[in-house]
Amino acid sequence: MGELRDFVAEVLERRGAAVEAVEPDALEVLAPKPVRDALGWPELALLGFGAQRPERAIPIGLEGDWLDRFGGLLGEDGRWSERQLTLAGRAPAPCDPQRVLEHALDLPNAVWRFHGVTPTFTRCLLLAFRYTAISDEKREGLVWLGFNLGTGAVIDDIAARLRRLLALEADWQAPDPEVRAAAGAGWDGALIQSRTRPLLEDRVKLELEPFLRAMRRRLERDRSRVHGYHDDLRRISLKRLATLSGATGEKAEADRRRETLRVTAIEREYRAKLDDLRHNYALRVTVDWVQALELYVPVQRLEVLIKRRKGERLIGIDWHPLVRAAEPPPCEAGLGLERVRFVCDDNLHLIEPAGQAPCPSCGKAFCRACHPAACPRCGTAVKAGAPHRVFS
Ligand SMILES: [Zn+2]
Ligand SMILES: [Zn+2]
Image (cartoon, rainbow, N blue to C red; front, side, top):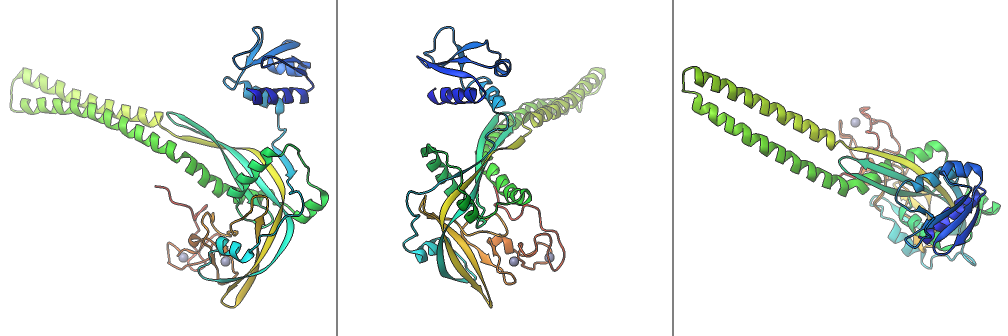
């Protein structure tokens, strides 16, 4: 409970409360009126954490709505922050840039040449989103996305490692003006949104895959149970009807009518039960932005000359000395989750293989970065969000 107690103490102090630690595992809080009103506490409150709390303490824990209430005290604070992470001494360059690039680059239709390496700083944007999926059960989780705003690369893996380093760093260092200048400008809202949306969709789908699979399994099981039950009843009634088919007389007629009504009732009930299931298993997914961190980090920028036919183009791929890894090359059409990039003929865009797939209508292969909206030959619109990884 130590972490929760420290968090609560810090939030309360920032909101003007006087907080003192009391053993075992408790806080004595003298809170100003707005905090008391928000949390429903007396002027002097004793808060207990964990099982060993003093008897008259208000129990605080992760269960219940305490986190929401402390979150309410935080308001919008902490939603966006910026921080610099530096190495002691100079950021080392990779010892063999050629080999680093051989690992990072896979360009089946172009050649490349290492051009040079420059030490600089870059700005990484780390975004956290919370997703909630509700059907017959509920699943929640966090998804982090990472971008290098200097090169445009998606750096989820490197960002995760950088976040682990941040957790070890006690001091919060604001970016120095010269570091900020070296890192260059950030992205505007529209660009962040257009880059974020397809990636986020893909990641949330991936996170929810096991949940959805289990849900489908339960739905299938319930559906076959409902079907089996009603099918048995219906079969019995139909059998009775069949044996009555040759019989004549008033009683047989009444029996036939009754049995026919029963079949109709069974079918109606079956449909109603299916509707219940559909309702019960309807899936609702919400995704909310929680936090953004702009992280200024030292990098070694590897310049690479890309050649395709008569054209050539210089691109930057950052090597991150803090985690001793190169980021994947940028991808100008598609998510670029794999390493392979094709280079387009006209503008030497780097695109994932699906980013130059043939048009589904006329079959012409074209670059989705040159023509993001529609096929240049027949005008068929490019599906929004495509190309995407396919889920079974
Ligand atoms: Zn292109
Ligand atoms: Zn076409």
